[in-house]
Image 1 (tube, one colour):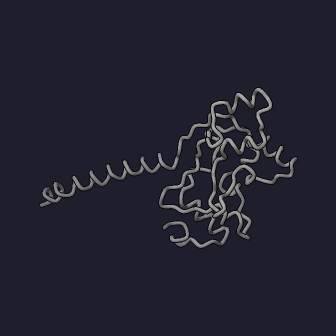
Image 2 (cartoon, rainbow, N blue to C red):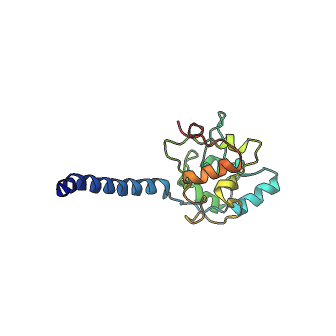
Image 3 (cartoon, helix red, strand yellow):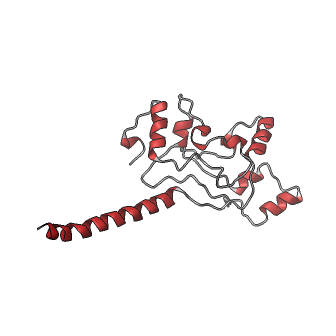
Length: 176
């Protein structure tokens, strides 16, 4: 009897374990995006320049659509609004790109089952700021992989922030 039960359940346990390993690897890969960063970017020097202009914060380059959705990484046209191509270095930097290109990939990629509104978080009265999730990008001087958002943004980190800001942790707040 014990041998029969073992023969029945052993394939089930092996299949369950292998499925777990495969899905775990796939999830880890999806959450740790590996984008290209072909143009060197220094947030610190750009932030200092924008401060001198009185242009504000992250939202100058990282804009929002009219409906409040985040545009993400800026396109070349946004860069050209300040870098008008008058120097040889600027001309060379933007030579291979159209205005609509976004040459920097993003490390921050939410799974399809998550809805996240940057505008709702940034415009609320609870004073959440870009640094809450993205760390001290304002003083970063590189686009290296190590200089990215804090961790992989697992759900626990989101829930900790919701708790600290007294935002509901109900599932439907972030998940459709």
